Image (cartoon, rainbow, N blue to C red; front, side):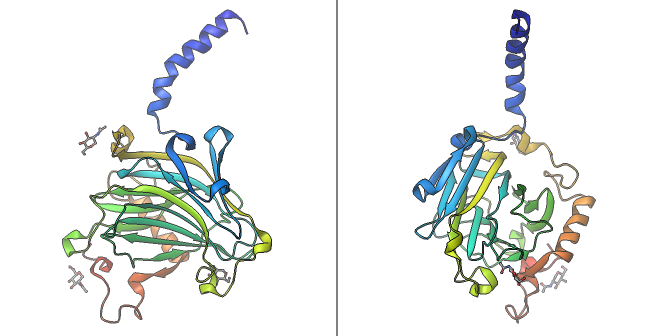
Length: 290
Ligand SMILES: *[C@@H]1O[C@H](CO)[C@@H](O)[C@H](O)[C@H]1NC(C)=O
Ligand SMILES: *[C@@H]1O[C@H](CO)[C@@H](O)[C@H](O)[C@H]1NC(C)=O
Ligand SMILES: *[C@@H]1O[C@H](CO)[C@@H](O)[C@H](O)[C@H]1NC(C)=O
């Protein structure tokens, strides 16, 4: 490499740094997360680009974001436990602290080899959850990384998988339904044993001969407001790629995709569980009003 190309490289680096740091790029796990549980079972490697959690018979593992967020869009790519993952749960969620905490959940319930994972979602506000929707996925989530996103705005929470909206939970405070609007949340994830309930309601137990079980994370991006550093510029611009105008409602394409996912892949919706709500559904379930 000659001097002029060295100069070009240096100039390019100097000129590009501000651009790169202001675009919506993946962050480094060392900078953004702490491994909080499971000793050596959680790892950050590849220069901070990949994180893995694993579980053996003695313990699972988990991590937590250093920052606390109050609204934003948070993307993470996950590759779930492969093979016979029955009994394992990979939880990935936002949560505040305390008895009246708020929480926005993705939970991935493992299964026997070749049988479908279940993606369980829930929203807690003021300590109260009970707003489950469950889905099958339209791909094998153990073969490749897929992006799971939470869009959390004062007017709604949108869950996305590979940028397709799978669930919208609207702010129905006007109907007296609490909504997370004031408690900052951290990002958490953990891989743990839940074979008392996870797979076919607890019928299929974890097969420890397959341990350790491992899930992988990469491509973390947050366009958010954090308590420590304020709002990212990206938070205010709509950077959805056609499926979602993040600043606004779902657009027509987003609504169409949402209907597709809910029609073909949703396997449980609390808003249509008559056994559970024989005397009428919670007010946020009234689609014509909310
Ligand atoms: C596991 O597979 C069974 C049988 O196909 C299915 O009923 C169940 O929903 C799947 N997922 C879980 C988490 O039990
Ligand atoms: C984002 O929008 C909010 C209110 O809509 C405003 O207060 C804030 O200054 C904006 N931030 C940026 C970085 O544009
Ligand atoms: C649902 O909303 C409609 C339109 O506002 C209203 O007429 C209806 O009474 C509501 N139903 C329930 C169960 O609240």
